[in-house]
Length: 471
Image (cartoon, rainbow, N blue to C red):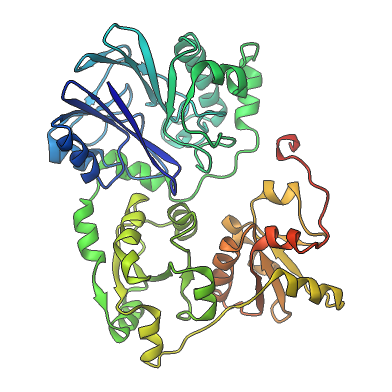
């Protein structure tokens, strides 16, 4: 038996490769499927099954393309009914893989088709549990993503999830290994652990949602408490996963089109494309195309694209280092943004050499910010971190305008007066700066290194409050 977790950090997503006696099952594959095929071929094995735990909202799965390439059937649990050929399994149905057996455990609640796959070894002993978004490490899947489709409230779904956990998962043995679909950083849950594999027994001990003395009412209240609105692109990813999508090879071919500065400018003017700059934050600060949006490839790239650009049909033109072009197009496609029209050949330096207009962002160190404060310069400060980060600790008298909701706060920013912007480490504040400038607000100063650098500079902040105590 071989079980391999293939974890993608930028999506906080775990796909799985399971092999036994020359037969392979893939669970929740990413959109670029060639690595799974290569892995099976290297072992002299054949992909037999593609299991999908549910219709994913935070990424586009590779199930359809992988099935087309290998002939392996796509298997969902009850209630799925996608628009392409697949097997809709029944609760308790078994699938043989070499010496192993997969048992379908229908565990609705996160969504109504959500299914957990129990793996039994060659002796019939329960060995591992692939829980999708039903059970995370330290948390459970949020119950508000499917309510419109299922015509249910999030409280209804939370109650169903409570029953699923207690009838299907908690009775299982403590020594079973839990393999979830996501880890810390995913928007599919609230309080996930940084670890990505654990035993069920340990989860029963420390996961708040698995407390044996917990009533359904308590569970519903705790699971639905503090849920931030889901990113706007989630429903569109669900639609693509349920109805189908374009082959990623075609997406890459279209996006990998080099455009001269003149052609790039013309394309931007003619198509209404978003100009997306994915370089390093300080490179963007030193010079960028006016109106372009910064979302750096080396941060939480794909989720922020989805959260801020929102519409997966939006055309995109890229500014990126040449060796990151294909990676960027691939990572965009993982969250359903398939309409990359091309990239600026020669990068931003080619734009400057062509004597095209460009803009900059004023960006200072935390020490410079400290000195300005000590000199008595009373300049407004805007914190763009998440609400929980802000509530835990922040600068006194600061304005809080979370990056995810920045467009709702534009009226709060001064029209002429200079102001500072900061986040936790400098990544999100540069995103915010680019959006503000795109909206015509240019009188800003970015604080490099964010709140971390501010604290290290010895600048006064509020007393720290543990986020887990905040309700």
